Image 1 (cartoon, rainbow, N blue to C red):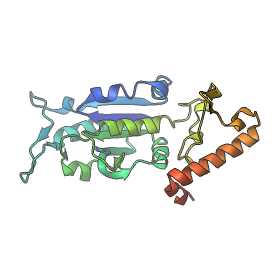
Image 2: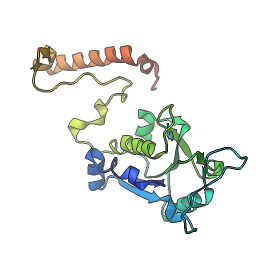
Image 3: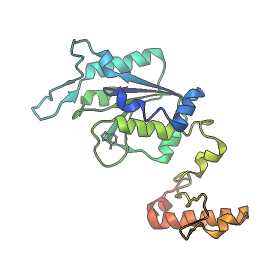
Image 4: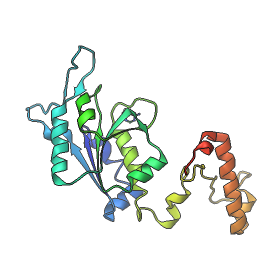
Length: 228
Ligand code: ADE
């Protein structure tokens, strides 16, 4: 899978996408993540990418021309399945959405900045808008990093068996059960006895029960989702 991320702040994306499972997926050639500086597609000396709003309201707007040039350049190299814009107006990122995106071949993610982007970009160039939650970030870079991380870890081969995505929270609309490591007793705070029993069938049963109880308590809304 190839992910091209267009941004005015490349530095903000480099570190979050260069560690752990994401780094391994890139090194194995399972994912190619390219960070594209929007300013490379400007023509003026100051490399301007924003301008004042028509209508007189405060706040700068990301201009259409550099964005169009960047997207057109990428599209001249290959076909893209989606051109995503990170925005609080978008569809909220979910595990099923991440699962779906991880099956795509090539995607572009455009990170918004300033007050937002010229609306014509959204009308003519963007195929999907994604929000990572109902709050407003300074720019779309952190959202793009979240989307990329949630997607790349799902590409077959990115995770080893014991990191398997199948045991993640949300994959079956259940939160993951509590997990523990050594020591079995720390200051009298004990690991549940069952996990030390070696009885795999009983452990599975306990973990499922815990998942169900935690979901009922913390995220009852998940139990109402119909996956059929
Ligand atoms: N840009 C600013 N806020 C955002 C959010 N909540 N999700 C995605 N992109 C954003």
